[in-house]
Length: 163
Image: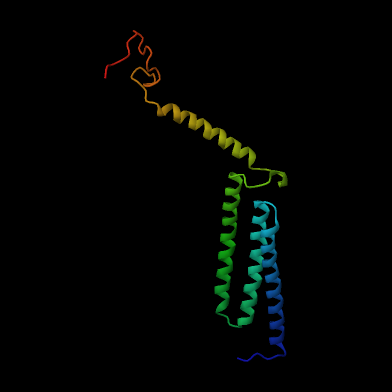
């Protein structure tokens, strides 16, 4: 099919060009944000927000330019897949960055995770302390098997059973 330079084809071509240019500019803005923003959280925002909209605009332009109905479901599936995976990957990157302290706390307006992370750290330390106490073998009378080596072990002054 040879497109006609007048009428509906000219309008579709113009809309396609606008969608492609705006989508490419959004993707370019995301790339510049990844390079220029100061910390992980800002870069994560730059990588996700404009990129999803930029991809949508480029896919819409492809769908318009193809002028075939069968391409639209494929493009919609590609965009939905992007919508589903981008937030999950951004969450995982943000979580890893927060836990490894790859962020600038002074740039955060509020740190809603600080109290949760501190509580989890205290709980983990308490469990570690319990776990290290239980890792030492106990004797029949409840004492630590290796804690009193070289000293008097039992209540009667004996060192316990001979080896």
